[in-house]
Image (cartoon, rainbow over all chains, first blue to last red):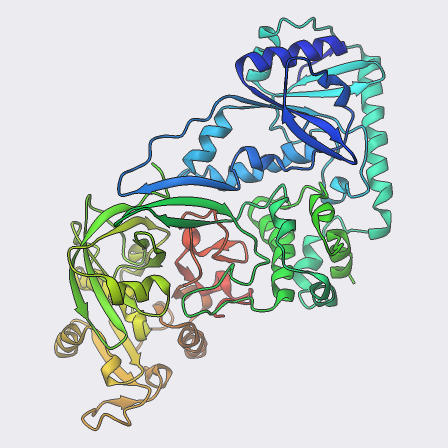
Length: 341
Length: 273
């Protein structure tokens, strides 16, 4: 992948160029969180390249939590999906897009709403420079910088320099359109970047040492279904579903119809959580997972066993959003640790 | 094409099959051709949707019949408030049906229970349309009581004919003195010394508990897990492998099923729950 060196001012120029042709979302620091907001002309967004991942998952921009997807009997018109540039998401977020694409863009019945947004999405991701105590991407086979594609441009902040990595044809085009002053990077810079990335990777690894999560965590997850940790965490869980809703990789939803007159309705695609008792319920009120312990196990098994079997990667990118969101302080790393016992 | 968009379908006939099961004949605005065993999402406008495998012949393209047991919100609404002439919604067909090509030249051993005869009727129609391609078709069917046997006219016809071998049983005939057939759950009539098990296939469709014991019985009879085709039923919202609800292990019943061989499922719990 092509890499160039630019100055901070050039990054601003890139963002302004993107803002002219698309909606632009940038991260801002809000207390201890990184929030997202619409870019305004006077913002100075390059200053927040250095943060950790934003609070909201990227999926919010591809399949909104509550979205109209059909009307009856008259069909709804095609949706508008204006061009959108997302700036500042980290590798955990760009990594999860491969799973969403896999599910939502299958050949036979692609989700046309997702597809439209996906086609019009431009991603400028950033290397992680800071680490939150909830970050654990290294424990699920990933890195705090992009390794799996799914970005158009990626920015690495190295001392007082910025390295742009181009991840797509659209990325090349955007650079050309912004007429950035791109400089070749030397081998020394390349090495320094590698070193910096190694260092941040070590930091994520080190802070997760105590959990001792096995590289092949899918094996104990499959074999140790009776692990006590599921029942133990079920004691604390309040079934709010927050872990699923903020999860980068969770994609579950249900279709809800709202009556709008005789034999007419509007249909909405609404995010759902497998932690809710009604999630898998069928007519007659039967459910295959009546116990919360079973639902917690299902969440872990789906992410670390079933999806691994289907796609050869985990349905977890180690972003730690579920840990931040949980009102009962349930840490998914402790669940994995417990499964290994 | 928008996968969540139902096609308007006029309800053209309502047939009472038993005290709890009704067949609805629908005429969709545009034909929804399906392979036997595939399912559709049937939608009652403003109330909701539920997945059903059509019970009619896959060879009939302009209309479809769906046989429904009234147990939930959508199905109860259908029973209580729906009339001929109403417009419902249908989308699909979805998933994998019965692999008829693979059945050809083989013994087909079918075990059904209760409303499970609905998808099986569609399968039987498909088999009968090309009956010389299959070695022997045997159907073992169980219902709760004589009154609960659906498709009485067809059942009568199949019993009289010689194209397939049909055997019936009821769980209990206690209040039905006229019943002179078998009594007992379907597994009690599943022994069959003539069935070619080694190179044959078996099909199971019915309520979860019946499917579980029929599957165990088939295994006991000598069928391998990959010779047992189950018509799986789970909560299916989207129907197109996205919403997550119907997951069993790495499979989505709506996409990888609803017809699935038991070898894929046997390692996962919750299969028959």
